Length: 331
Length: 263
Image (cartoon, rainbow over all chains, first blue to last red; front, side, top):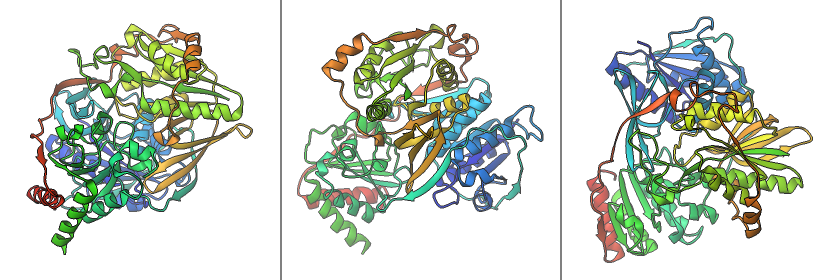
């Protein structure tokens, strides 16, 4: 019986990405229920901070220092190290894992693809939960834009699993684990991609993938000025701002906030949709949200079929009334 | 400038008719196929680069069932030069590992400066195949591109990669594999002239044997993953329609959020 590995990706400010804390929590529960060891892995130019943070969730964390990670895209550097840890003929190779868990964010997906190619291991993507059967992990996924739930396994009994954001709440372990600095010999290296510059843009919104509450606007918002209402409601509810493709293509809000078929798939506790008709291309990105509340003037909008509450009315009038009531509650 | 664009025919997400067959594989006959959304964005980026350079060609590469040429014609009508269609009965039911292996092998037969791929596909949503293709080929992989700027004289490419707080500016030598997003810009509609021209454009068909691969090591017989079971998600409760004054609508929302302990 092999251990479970959790490969943590770097967070925005050098610490641990929240999605990695969630994956670690999920892996710890899975390890406890199946009697498997769980090992966290941090690969960074200076892994100390992220490794210490990951050790609040897991009993053992391997900290692998790789100077190349400082000025190069993370996934290629990390994939080389993970592939070397997995190499059957490598030196000092640890016990092979039964599953490698990685967050399904941008870096995690890049890593999963590269490690799969280097190791031949299969990948099950966007897991919403993981259980164990006699034949290995059983991975639950939501497919076809939430129309169907599948459970899948690895024909070889082991593989790589990417974990969808927000399916687990990160919870620290009762006691912090230990960090073990580890070197990896003979890293199978992939061509490095240089990071020339890291640019922060003003007005970048909170990440919609990790948000508990999303207030989203569509064509009905009418323009960039209309998004002020969306933003104010998001602020009042402590949520993030989302949008439909129509709003993004019109230039009212950046692509990073787009939800749907060519944008992001989200699953917040609350999805408040303002002026959104609920076309299938948008629906696939948000239909599995916990609660869906829609405000739309058009009582025949498709979103009326899958929202929990549908308020027929002008989004600005209802929005202003909602802001007033929310502020009265918190004040 | 030679660009290969990976193109995947996917079940039309607008049809909402996707389903699994009895074998647990996607029933591709159940819904019409369209070009994957993100693939259209990278194709558009490729067309703009070729137009700006005043020279170059775009080859579409697709691993897909025998019906794929109909879907590929639309991408050819947008302006791509030719298509390569990898198809083989043994590839039905391929997992991502096989897909990446086969695409990498097919790319090995082509000459290119850059390979463009949509960052993920609307049917699988895994977003892992472009990275795996790059790793197989031993080429740099630049992902989540919002802008692609090759410098053919220096043989390098710069990519703006979307990050949580803005973007990273990435640079790598050519040839390279690039995964692109919708932020690259709206794809064009094929013109009538483009549609006419696409009819006579070449689509080369390649089988596994042509690529020097065998059906035991890749494809349906070599899957690494399998669907064990599936079920419908729990039905949502019926929608509560609220009509009345804005204040009444807002009150109902606040009450609902309080009932659900969201506020």
